[in-house]
Image 1 (spheres, each protein chain N blue to C red):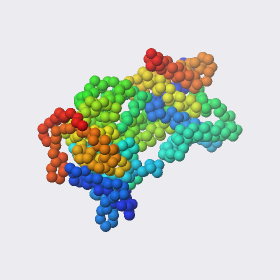
Image 2: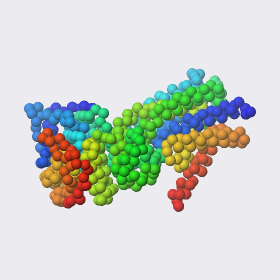
Image 3: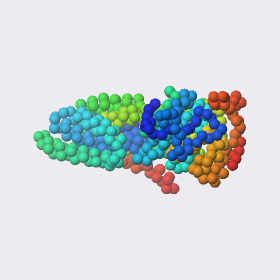
Image 4: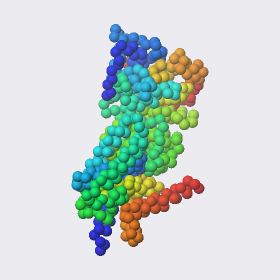
Length: 265
Length: 305
């Protein structure tokens, strides 16, 4: 029987892998990796607020990621500053705010590394509950909008011309993304959350013929990476989150090599 | 419905007598040559109640540049309206505005309630990030049974492509597949933005024949945008020359002879103007409504010109 902290880490990681797989596919399909990165880093502001006012950290992160997401939806409609510049600006402003806030809160012992790279071995039963409930909500919402979201991801104008209310479905997606990011930050940290979303999906792409297959394979890669990463982490005393992400990167490299060779040949 | 208001005091709308399905093109004249209507100098023609889509006084301005000026257009059931014009004439913007993808700055668009639209955009970019078979792509247009999928693929001559990945298709194959996606919806209105782009001459004739045949079979309205000034699908019931404003419009044979056409594209273009000829597959009743004949699809003739 493994230690309870290891069991909780395993459950948290596997749960996140399952949630991240279909959502990560959409992040890849909709080219929103940088968007997700910004929302994740903005989550640090939530961490800072939660620490300053002694709130539940996941809840305060969730509030911030939701607000930032809605703000980005509004800001994406202006055309003065290119959207990717705006994302870069926001992401790093949030990072700065988070790091400064963590340094100001001196009362308690703050492990900044834990918020940047996650602390999967510090997962509590309450965190697990968040993952279960939040993950179920996220997956249910995603299943509900799967078809229209896929349709507009393939070609937005075509979907709109065919009468799909695309703004509504895009909004649902952005809110689900905010929810999952808020859950993931505790596990893999603000800087690795987006990796956890896009890497399994990217690794699954060359092996997939259908969108659903891609989500499935991404889930399998994600879960395998969690198991292998945690094993590596325990065996070699390396940090948990980064070890998992390293496994994901290895899966991606192995998966993409045949495609690259085929295109060269 | 998008409502707009014409600026008062603005000269009246150009005469675009779409109501008469003329044998003579009606000309909007030059920009300084507006016909005035009524005592107020403001007489937007009412929307055509029979039209699938009817637009009046469309104005689109982007970044201070005027793209569409006072464009009126109607597309009725069973009617093929071809829009031609030089690059930058606003053809695609007109199509996109009618589809609701662009907001007009002024003017009004009336669409039949619940109008089912099939759309083939100008350049269909395939997103390689999404693994998608041709069949699945078509199903995204409508939840359809296998026989329906097979039927539309056969109609566009793409019956062998069903299991292929979308991102592996050639340009011509992709165009057929996008058309199949439009057809699976059993649309009442088909909007095709440069469907023959990148297709060779034989393929072009074939595609036009297909569109004409399907129109006769299904009775849908077609808005066809074409960059080809020389060859216009002869089954077009009306050709609309666009250069931000509507220069002239009329039945295909007459447009080429119109001085506005020659002015816009040069006398050489007017001489080279060709038509894909066809046998009349419908006639018009006294109100100008197309009345499809019951004799099934016909083989269309060879291109002329």
